[in-house]
Figure 1 (tube, helix red, strand yellow):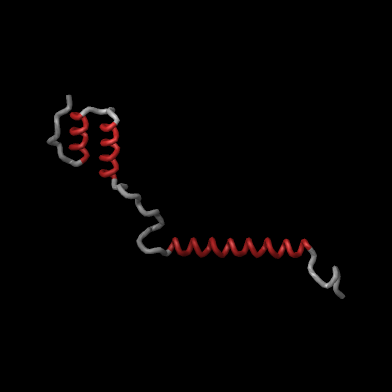
Figure 2 (figure 1 turned 90 degrees about the horizontal axis):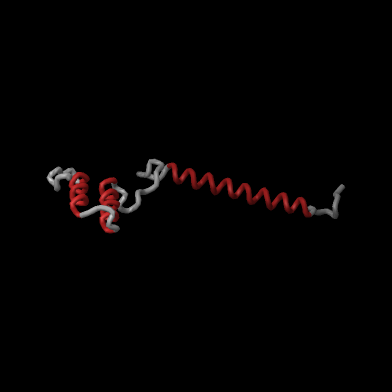
Length: 93
């Protein structure tokens, strides 16, 4: 009643191994998605990077431009005052 020497051939071992790997990958992906979906406080978004608040990031960009010499001191102070919501900075030219 048995064929192929009472055992599984090479293709059978390959198919069984491949199917096991695929099933394991699917289960792992499902677990990762469920954990990400139900993690408290993330609402599906990644955690913000340090300094990711809009005004802080804008001030960093402005400081970088000033450090590279793209803008002068007066323009830096004026734009910094605008970013911080303080209109008492130096007047534009």
